[in-house]
Length: 128
Image (cartoon, rainbow, N blue to C red):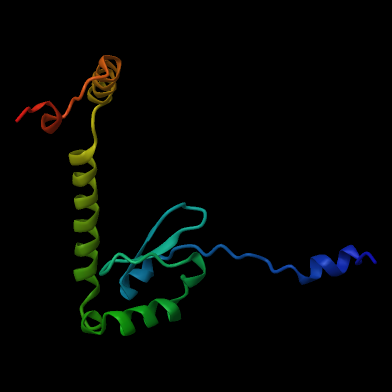
């Protein structure tokens, strides 16, 4: 027996994509991910919550249950923390990225070693 298409669409829930509000910084949250469906990210611990959790009551609950000692700090403190986190991410990205030429050279060396079919680590080449 086939259901009526109107009843099928009636049972489907509409997915709401919440938008980040700059005022959420007072709950110690920033955002990460896609701009169309941002995810709240705690400035203190870095936890990322789902988009559905981007509601002031849920953000407050995370703050007061997870970080009660930070609940009474002012908004400017967390704005500074957020800026510091952004600077640190940028620095780490620069520090750990490898240039394309270095990566390509590494592949060429690995290919040469593979062609020789000889041991290539220090422990394998030492003879006792």
